[in-house]
Image (cartoon, rainbow, N blue to C red; front, top):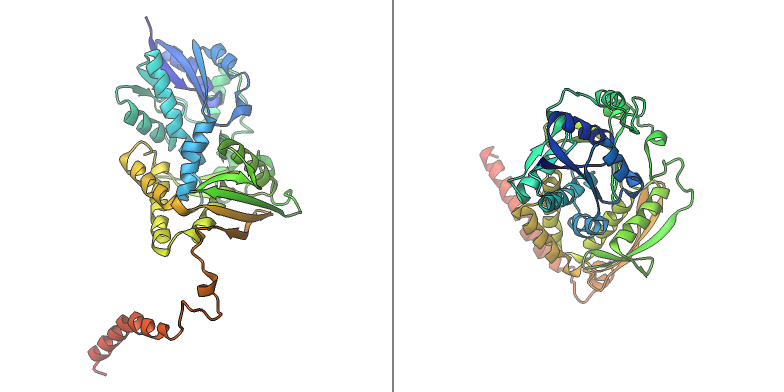
Length: 403
């Protein structure tokens, strides 16, 4: 009886050629596993395609709701931005996909999992770190680190030689990753930072700035303990909310970034990212935190947010530190409840007002008017104490100079 191998299968260029390659190289029974994290449009006919490519069995697992609720929304609560720009759309999906691959491997009694990540990319680390954390007994096969294929052009040639139907061409060479949170675009002319991206050719769910609506649009998002629960006063599920915000944000060219990032594997790479809905959510959530969190908590959480983003980017989801940070973040969200109004226009998210029963802004204290809670004369003593270290330092320097 043949050993079984579970392949993380997307139906794209890399995984399409991996099935026949593995069948040539190893004597495995290949089980293709497609994990749907919101790339629904790309999955039409995927089972038939996998079987025709040589897979003996195909799983198509729809985990979009889990992805949004347990991964995307955690990142929103954390305000997680890698290097200040990237909302981690690909990074967040990898641990969930890995979890499903391991579950299928257990169900099928498979001892191996294969993926189509290149040796230059971050995803190989994310998949393999997650698999190791979930079941270290499972072996991993990464063809890009083994075979003689060295580029996407080579991969296209291999597919053509073996009559494997693919969408990618040498003229349309972009490598894309899509889920309900974002679409990433890499490769081709994008790779060179000197090249201005041809957004008309690249973008798939977002308008260019020039094509975006000439009319501003106002939206209202209501949060309960850091979780968005209503859009424009209507109750909405996490998946439906992100879907609708992607449409709204895409129309206004929200959330398209050009990022030259520092990869985990030691090199810089450039990508174009479309993340309209999550960008809106992140902005709204952060503004509400400004209203409802005290200074010390808000400022320390900024440090936590940066670390959280690095952990997710580096593929360390299944780790005690990430779980511990989640506990801290969850505690900070106790009072992050309220309504945020936003104005969307030509790539801009403009705050148009917010309100919360937990607001720490008190007009009678913060305004320039008279307040029974604040006496301007009290500030004199505060200033004397605050400036004391500066005065001592100045006196010391004066003494050293003999003045």
